[in-house]
Amino acid sequence: MLYAICMKKWLKPANDWCNKYEWIVFLFLLVIVLRLPSLFAPHHYGDEEIYFVMGRAWRAGVGMYSAAFDHKPPLIYVIAGITQSVFWFRMVLMVWMLAHTLIFWKLAKRFWGGIRPKMAYVSSLIFVVLTSIPTLEGNIANAELFMMMPVSLSLLLLLNKGKATKLNYLVSGLIAGVGLLFKVPVIFDFIAIVLYLFAFEKKSFADGARSLISPKLWLFLIGFFLPIIASIINYQLKGVGADYIRAAVLVNFGYVSSWKTGSTAFNPLQSGLVVRGMILAIYTVVLYLLRKKLGKEYVLALLWFGYSVFGALLSARPYPHYLIQPMAPLALLVPFVFVIDNVMSWIAIGFVVVMGSLVQRNIGFWAYPTIPIYQNFWNYATGKLTKTEYRNTFPSAKMNYAIAEYLNQRMTPKDNLFVWSSDVAVYNLTDKLLSGGKYMVDFHVRDWKAFDEVMTNLKISQPEYVVLLPNPMPFPELTDMLNLNYFLATKIEGAEIWRKL
Image (tube, rainbow, N blue to C red):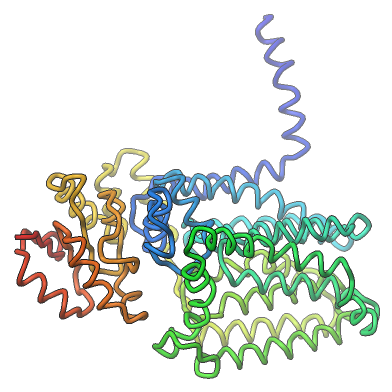
């Protein structure tokens, strides 16, 4: 009896809290349920495997960007280096997204509170579902999911105009700038926020022009760029500043052109960037002219969505996770279809739909299967699939794990390994660092014409094993080296494993 009374007394505060915050509790549970299968996935996803290689290079002190190359700023690699496994990497992402869910819920309440408070529930539900399901790779620890939370938090802090002091603008800029340390395209979300706060919210064009010399604007800008400047100084002090700037900043100019042009040379005309930029400029001007008729909340959602989509389309690549970037403004925008009541607002919705259709027709974004992910996990959780059977439901996992098992049984800690492929999972499954130079995947070697550099490094490192995954990119010099100094030890799932004579 006493036990029951005590339990009731202790549980009452928790029960009262849940009743008061039942919607955010529901959203948290939904995030956890939708992301739970991702925690038990094997090494299989290409970008994550690159993050792990970069992270292990960072942990080993051999130098990101100078000894291991990829073209993102450092935070995603640092997190991968700290977590070291798919489970913990995605666990960090889950916690990150739980925090983002809370922030977005508060943002949605502030956004919708003055017009249709109940729409905040719709917005937050859309946000959680679209950023969590595998359709757009919401289950993968990609930079887009990490970079958007600082933007949402920055906007949330500044929407309360009565408390937006100069210090608030500096702090909000610093917070948004953390997103820039995950991926560069987040700068366009920042631009949208700047335009809204310092131009669109002003009563007249003259007021907006005067805001350009506002201390709040300059503090906001300084705060945003301070983290990336600090990172440049940090790498400069380590002696690899030039490598960092080239990899994390300059390379991205060529990257946005390479999908359409087949070249890493920056070509905005041929890549379509100029056309998309002109459309965005016209879109911005029209929104500005119609801002008073459309309403400030509607304009904010449209403006943020437009610039976020532009950021997602920078390289015109059809990767689904790029579409994660505009999901936050989209979640604010979609509920307007239930509340708008004038022709101008419907025209704006129609324009967005038409442009979205044209983008999909031109770029053709992929979509990943969602239901099989949950079905396979359920079968694994209920014992219908063994751990190995479940692992083998993921692309390339069967091959990579078999290769790693073979190598781990034969390699010593001192043996070097070289893998020629676009898939670097074998490096992580064998806990080996790169031996062919800083370019870890074949398309980086091709894009930056680094074949000679790779061969120079292979002659120095003398890897004990060389792995050629199925359908390798042509590399005649590597083929010659294998034929002279190596023998074909075995074939596994179409992959060739060569061992030094």
